[in-house]
Length: 238
Image (tube, rainbow, N blue to C red):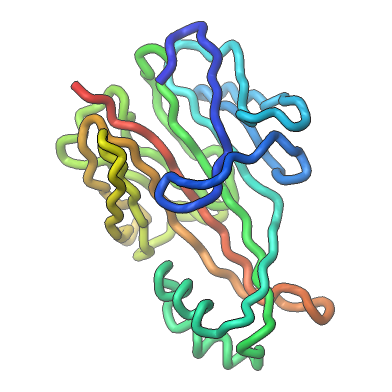
């Protein structure tokens, strides 16, 4: 939450449970970096090496939505059990059968991944609404955490390529005022919607991960691609 007229700053972090290194503004690392307010979408025009990566002036009163999509990164799985743990944690189904049916090795194979992040920021009152902004995968807030009554939960919509993702896992990281983080798992309904339990004074990160098969054009190419959708927001204390 920021006051009208104050600069809006944000750090790009990669890690777990709200912990992780802060990454600088490096255009080679992303394909999209915008600040949206309603239908007005402004590209973040940073300087190479800026940290915080987002230093934005001129946000109007209302709800601001930070949009960030990374370029692809790659990793190599040298241990089959590690891939299975990841697949189980993110609820990808019977990945072992799918992997073996494609005739893929169980060691030394590669995965590529990309991150598709949104963050809701209240400028002043924070009035306004989130919407679909065309990220490849996206979590859309169906309520405003800064202005709406969330006593019945915080509704979200999970999208992939603009289409709802039915019956998939949403992981919710909840940081309380003392800094303690708890994690709960939830599922979308047939329309791709989930209702997340939230409390005043807490900060939240919701994520959903998609795993897609890739065909190799040459040896060493990735055989899987994961897309990580996330949404961060706070629920103000009364």
